[in-house]
Image (spheres, rainbow, N blue to C red):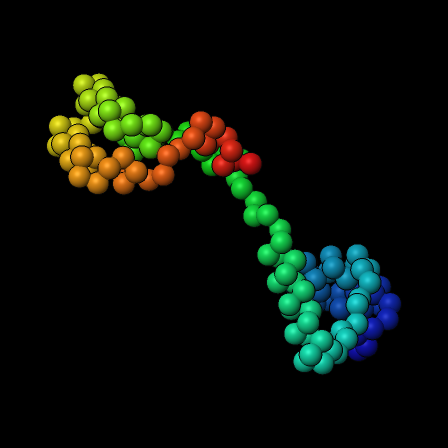
Length: 135
């Protein structure tokens, strides 16, 4: 049975068995063009791969615009927005009084703040951090 030629001929001749393969039947009935495979030497193949890699590198990675939706900032997120250690201490005290931070955790955070400094929690998060990092 020829593989090239009239797709209707193929479907009719395979009609007994083709029902077992509904996706194949749909593809054959679509009559899509078949592209022949072309041999390329090793050098040309390497060049094509490099071009594809270069195109992939140049593209800006897609960022999910909803990745921060429903995100609940942690004490660390609030501390990273602070300008001074005094501001960070106020945040820690406020969250402890509010009940969002245990006494033990507040002691650990204050100890880290005093011994390692404000930026030991990470670089400062600027205003608009979440919207800028969503683009």
